[in-house]
Amino acid sequence: MNEQKSRALLLLRPQERARAAAYLAGRGMAVGDKLEPGIGFLLAEEELLPRPAEELARRCRTLNVPLFLLAERDGAPSEVHDAAAFVFYKPLVLELVLRRIALLLGENDDEGGRQGWFVLQAQCSLDALNVPRHLLAFRYFSDGVGLLSEMPYPSRIKLMQQLYPALSERHHSSPVMVDRAMRHGVESCWRLAGKAVQRQYFGYSAQDKQGMPTNGEFLFAVYEHVKLLLPYDRGRDAFLRELRLINDRDNAANGCQSAQDLVY
Image (cartoon, rainbow, N blue to C red; front, side, top):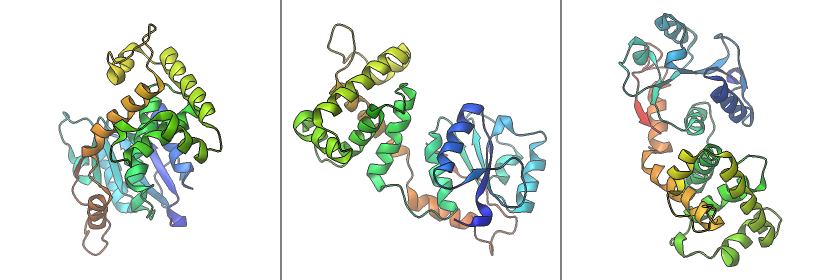
């Protein structure tokens, strides 16, 4: 990554800004306080842009800072849409948007290909289900979803005989400890997550009297949810082709091309 472009400017709501800052910090990128030379990119929610927003867009062009915009799909396009390098329409997964932007800054690793995509999306789903990130279950479930994505017939896998040993070997644990940790994660979800979120993921598939899914039901519910989102990922190659057009200094007379409609 270019050392002079090692900062980003984020105009996001506090919770999303914290998530984005943590993601970028893990990749060696800091968060700046103002738009100035050395900022690698600006990621902003359209409704949080200072008014008039066109002035900020002009400053981005002057400083050669790509503007990435998060907007509502039913909102009316404005002049700032035309000035943005990309417009990402909600609903979206913030980490996926940041992964795409990181590619512009020189990261060639696509975070593990298909399996990495499943793991990242599973982590976002576990966040929505209020499974705390400090629990071992968070890593076991997300990695478990990634392993399922590589199997030709994931529904036939046997947890105790196949999946748990694979996870325990990866995390230097034991199948029994993996089982217990996952159960703790399910119990935490059922205690902390709202009923609406639980129904969204699990419906009426629970079997025991408390309505709590088994480890396997929980894992496959997250996996199926992630799999449904797969068609919305346009892929690394298509995104890089668009970014090359945007970042082509010879052809970009105005510094930025027109906004592209990507769904996440």
